[in-house]
Structure formats: structure tokens, C-alpha cells
Amino acid sequence: MSSASAAVDISNPTLFMFVGDREANVIDVVSLEDAKVVHRIETSIHPDHIIATPFAPILMYADIDAKKVVFYNLEEQKEWNTIDLPMTPRHAVLDTTGAKIGISDDVDGGFVLLHAYKRAIEFSIEDFPASSDVLFDPNDVDIYYTNNAGGSLGLLDTNTQKTYEMPLVDAGSAQLSAPSRSLDARYVYVSNAASGEVYSLNAYSQVIFNTFDLGGSPARPYTTPQGAFLYMMDVDSGRFMSVVQNQFEEYADVRFEHGVDLVTVGQFDRMNLFLSTQHKHWYIFDNVSKKIVASGEFDGQPINALGSADGKFAYVAFADVAEVAVVDLESGKAQLVAATDSGSGAFTIGLSNNVCH
Picture 1 (cartoon, rainbow, N blue to C red):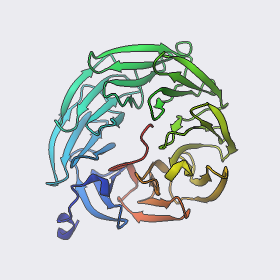
Picture 2 (cartoon, rainbow, N blue to C red):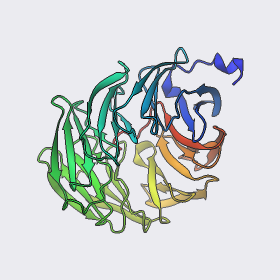
Picture 3 (cartoon, rainbow, N blue to C red):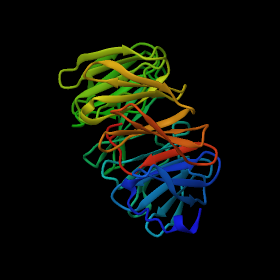
Picture 4 (tube, rainbow, N blue to C red):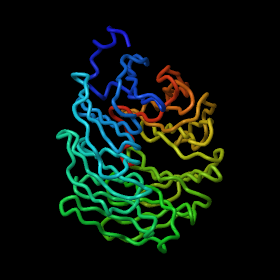
């Protein structure tokens, strides 16, 4: 990048999007205000995962093949330190405080808890079950995970570093999603692609409180930022069901195209962007009128989508085109921003409203 870009202040993560190239060891820094790349970070490892801590000038990126993570100082614009991991970092999740990062592996298992501010490993568990994204409870102690081999929802107590298993289905017969939770952490939600069901577990009694038969292959459940609704999507049929959480009553039941497995939610849980990691179509669903109010097709294949903290915008990165999309959820218009050289492998924003997912 030019010398002018090197002088750009990128120390406040909440003002930026960080987009990792799917091939090269670079991360483009996109200004959310100006909608353009203002800086390029050259990394010593490939950024397969990127995590920005919203309350400190710290960026973390992980390389799956190298089994390494790097902590980057956004204020000084240099790499702080590199950590070798005792397991493969196929999944990385930031906790609710912005201070700790859970690293898991859904193939070979293993778990590492990193402290972002200390830039060090808190502890590691080598015999941790194979698990995708973990879910942090807001009590800063408990971490939920799913165990397909055991057919269970697991709970890791970070104080004792012990795990507890809550059986959901017969061992070996499950295709469980990563867990999600209600805003108040009273309920934990898990979908089972093998049965077409979504389970609602009471976090206190640790038993299934309700089961929703969505059919097909349900994606990971999603709790809306205001906490009013539980969203469930069937990847096979495109069916979308929303449920009012306090009574667990059905609110809406509509159909999109098959493959829809991503959602970002707008202000007041109203305008929602639905899209897919399998195709390029997108839909904006009005949760008040319960209708699709806008739709279109992206140029590229989405890898993920995140909602802005204020719920006004959705951000989408693509695997096969060198750009990201900024979608105005109210107007339904998408702005494309040139970023990366060959498409995105990972991306994040400094602060998102995807709080319970």
C-alpha cells in the first residue's frame, strides 16, 4: 500500500472491517464510514480466521495448516507475537467481553482458550471432543459446545476446566449444529440435520424444553439482537420459521430458495438479510409485515455475513470475487467495495450485533 495508507489510524477496531485474502498472506482494512480499503496488513501466516477485539487495538488471526495464531497491534501496526497451538484451529470464537477466544476443531478435537489482552494461552484441553464453534455464556465461566460423536450438548466450566455432557440423541446418529443462546442465556438452541429438528434446552435444568420439527437439514439457529425471536432455517427446502421466545409460539413461516443458511438482523429485529453459502441469491425479509420486501443476486459466493452494531447495515464477504458488500437493510441497496486480490477467506468487523450466534 502507499505510504499515505500506512499513516491511517486503524487503532479503533469498531470503525473497520478486516478482510483476509483467501490465497495471499494479507488482510485489507476497510473503513466502515468511507466504504473503502484504507490499509493493508501483511501477515506472517495465512489468516484463515480473523478476530478483532472491540475494546482494544488487538487483531488476532489464525492459520489452520500451520496451527498458529498471531496477535497484531493495530495501534503500532505490527505483529506482537506468534503462538504455536497444540491442536488445529478450525474454529475461533470471541467471547461476550471481547477478551477471550475459544479455539476448537470439529475433525480431530481439542480446545484452547486464549486471552486476547494477555496474548497468551489460558489453558488447553487435548482430549476435548470434536466440536465446531463454541458458545460463550455471558457469565464468563461456561462455554457450550456440541459433540456429534456423543449426540450431546457439552458444557465446559472454565474455572475447573471440566466438561459435562447433556444427551440430546443417540450417540453417533447426530449432525448437530454449533449452539446458540437466548439473549438472557436461559435457553440454548441446537439443530440436528439428521432429524430435521431444532432443540431448545433450558440452561438451568439442562433438559430439552421444546423441540421444533423444521424438516430437512436445519442450519444453526439464530437469536435476534433484541432477544424477541428465535430464527430457524431449513437449508434443504429454504423454509424459514421464526418463534417468539418468551412463549415459544410460532410467529412466521415462509419459504426462500434452498440453501439459505445465513442471516443478519436489522434494527428492532425488523429488516433481515437472508443469504446462502451455497448460492448467490439474497432476500430482505420484513419481520413486521412477514414478507420478502427485496431480493437480488450477488456477483460472488458468500462465505459469511455480519450485522452492524446499530442494525442498519449487513456486511458480506465473498470467496470468489475481490470485493465485499455493504447492504443497507432499510433501503435494500447493496454497495460493493473492492477488497483483497483473489476473494475472501475470512473477515470480521470490530463490533457486530450477532451477539448470540
